[in-house]
Length: 414
Image (cartoon, rainbow, N blue to C red; front, side, top):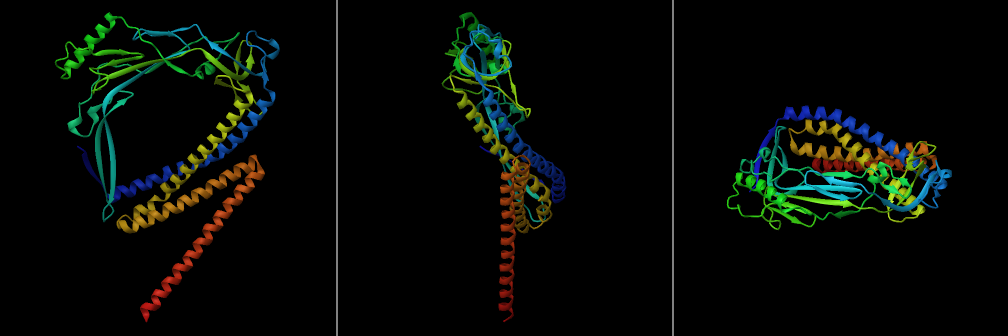
């Protein structure tokens, strides 16, 4: 059953909050503008760096021996990334010879969800009704139910055991006669399950500990129950893995085994480092499997432009939110009459959205004018066209409203 709380914010507090939001709005507006400018320069510089790198990339004939003549050059090579390092999770005694060993821990807990409904009151105050609901879910860490708003769900959560999600990585990974650097090792992917092999003595000890915890939380009648279960690469704490109960914990281990990889990086003695372009941008990459150099560079260009559009959207959003924060005071001052304030708020929101879009186009255009003049001029032309369109439409709308008002006044007079 849902639990609700109602709070009221007075008109004076709302006005004060709106004044404070002006400063936040300016900061968001400036941050969005700076992000838009920086992003356009980043795209151009990254593209130039990738073209420069592609032109000087040479293929290693073999990785089985180190060719001193290739030292300092940007090389492309495909081969087997291998390791003999033994990685161990000392807390549980789980180990594997692998490039990476990872432990993932999940807890079955009550989780609180909230939903707010805002209602303006005549006189400028605001009523906020918050509805809290609770569901059982697997979470990445224990949930403190003592902080729940509904007293009926407080102190409901507990856990049968605790452990952190963690990973261990090999220090020495070879690539033929070469050693991969830490960044390259981190880029190796391909999780596989770790087969668990635990002796009965260890399991009995864990069972005893879990039985005591469960007993303290009302779990009577489980003295003979198996409370720690092993299933492939998962260790499950609880009565039944197929029917999870609050407090249950599941721990999963995965490993990354040696695999074939393709790298593009600058050879430095018996290892690799990043290539530095003339504009200062750096590049090195490791991808799984066998890939052509041209294919890798094409993917890097796509990723660069995809990030460009993501950051453009984020920048635009920051600018619009910032403008709304600056001018939100206009709507708040009129909250004494909610109907009028809603109309003004809708208008302010529309204007801020249009102005934010035009401003973002201007910033993008100026940035491209700085980096690539022809494209910059085209973007600025589009921004100017939008300004003219909205200004012209605004005048036409104003004329129509004036004409309608005159006609109504004449009819009233007759």
